[in-house]
Every structure is written in structure tokens, then in C-alpha cells.
Amino acid sequence: MTEEILPVMARFCKEAFETQRKFVPDDYFLPDGMGEELGELICQKNVDAWAVYEGDQPVGGAVVRTLEGLHRELELLFIDVKQIGQGYGTLAWMELEERYPDTRVWRTVTPASVIRNMVFYVNHCGFHITEILTEDLPIPVCVFEKVMSD
Image (cartoon, rainbow, N blue to C red; front, side, top):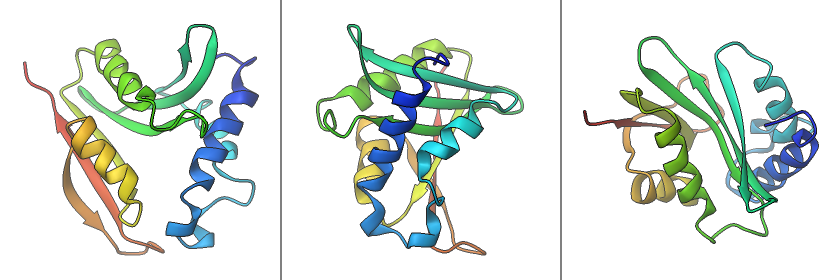
């Protein structure tokens, strides 16, 4: 993800997360939306940010954090709201797996109330719910893991 495309990616991210606002309390979101989080995340250590394209058209983005060992966390995966349901999220996930072939365990989290995300991670990406966090959180959050085979 380049500096030039960041404003478009921030808008896509914000709009994608806004579609799920009705399923989570208002205090779960940052004041300026999730696009603000994208700008902060991509500056952090051990983080890669990716723009997803269809030809020369941007359609979404992803942020991956490298953890200890051969573990990685999918921090964000978002698709332009006009493109949701077209298969871009699944294709983006498959590409991320190919870009990080040494990963042994992938991890991600999503609010338990956002069923669309839960179905996507389990049915389209092969994740399993490993934990539901509730302590000190405004809403329950599902932790997903995908253990990669050798």
C-alpha cells in the first residue's frame, strides 16, 4: 500500500466497517472511523499493508502483522462496499497466504455480533474460532486461528 493510495484505502476501510456499525456499540468505533486506524497501523513495526486491485482499480486492502516465530495476525481486511460479495475478500485472503508461505499460524479477531465476518473467516478462509473474549471489552470478540499445513 503506497502513500498515494492510502486516502482511498482509508475511505474503503471506514466505509466497510461502517456497514457493520449496527451490530456493535458506538464506543467500539474510533471517532473518525476505522480509516483512522489504518493510517496508524501501517506505521507500526512488523506490519505490512496491502492494497487489493482488480486490474488497475483498487477494490480493498489488508494489514498483516508479523508476530513471534512464524505467526501472523490479519489486523484488517476490507473491501470497497460497492465490491462486497464479488469474491475479492476471498481472493485477497488467498493471495496473502501465498505471500507469506512460511506462516505456521494465522490469527485474526472480529466482534462476535458481526456474523458476516465470522462466516467469511470460517467458510471462505478456513479459520476456526479458538476463543471468545469478553473481559474488559464492550462486546464479545471471537479469536480465529488457521494452522497451516506443511
